[in-house]
Length: 220
Image 1 (cartoon, rainbow, N blue to C red):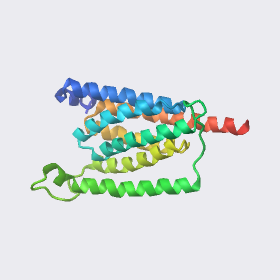
Image 2 (cartoon, rainbow, N blue to C red):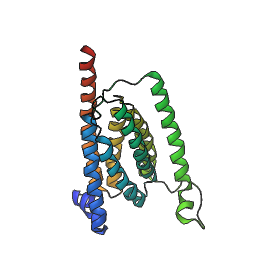
Image 3 (cartoon, one colour):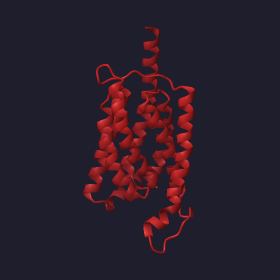
Image 4 (cartoon, helix red, strand yellow):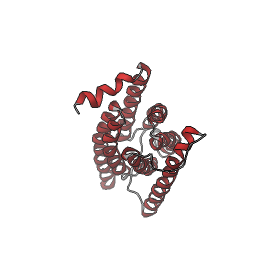
């Protein structure tokens, strides 16, 4: 399969509105990650626009886990927005730290609960889709759906740690973004797969930048 088949051909069946929405969601998503690297509170308003767009796109693509996580992102972005504003002296930038042992436990619990909940949603998906004559089960899942369940749990934990201004949040983003690249190509969302490639690079830069910022603050 060549690059045309992977990144262009799927869009031949899409209408212009869907393509425009995906491109817009990708742009605002990249802006959100850029602001998060800079520890700038604008990470949240730009992120909210992106996540709302992707709620619609991912639902249509059948990726319920990622669709649900974008609903969660929207809610968590509002929470993070308020939290960052309270912890910022200039109401724009925040200071970051490493997560405590207790916060790691909370993140692990969130990860496990997410795995169970999203798996249950996929279990009910055939019935939800058809309502009458539908069935319950997981036999309809392909590898991308299983990866969607896993990445959803990774991103949930990462988003919670980012709202807490914890450096480890970037580790979750890096792992999840890497997995999402082939998954989005498989689902015919080439623009989004490129976005996740950019996200991976930016997440690595974010981890390095936050870690450096913490060290500089510590020596002052």
